[in-house]
Image 1 (tube, helix red, strand yellow):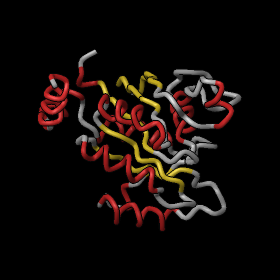
Image 2: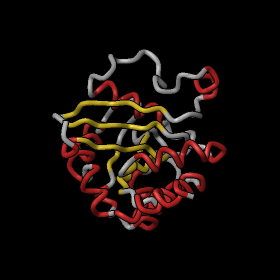
Image 3: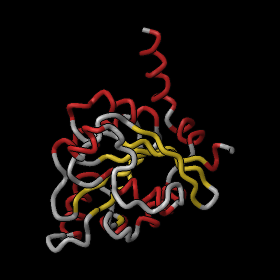
Length: 199
């Protein structure tokens, strides 16, 4: 498959914003796995299943509308910063996943700024829109204030029902450059990594 039809991405989120469960819904919708009776298919370690956290990055490949989508399920906790940095270095863009009933957590902002420093494109997504306490309009306005992406471009999804997850997959192939174009637009990212490797 040519790089024109390849998209590489990760998901940035706080540890309790159900990032891995959203990844599960993506895998189901793209028919990568059958519908799951339990969540966290990418969190395979016993401690990850027990505590509902991602410790080690895990890659997953999906097919959507003749495109190859490569997801890296990324840890959300700062204690696993090395795994986060590896994920950000391997992709061209990131989903910023925020709980619609909360605000962007400090740990998420830290990872978000790292992603921006890595020249990654950001697609903001609000999760848990089906909860009674959800306030998507308020949280979307706050996200717009932080990263200057218009609130009406933010995708609202439900990890529980799978609502609008297909729109996230569509945004992946419609809005984001393929690896070759991304490299041409951001050559300094790869030059820095090469120099650091030589040292």
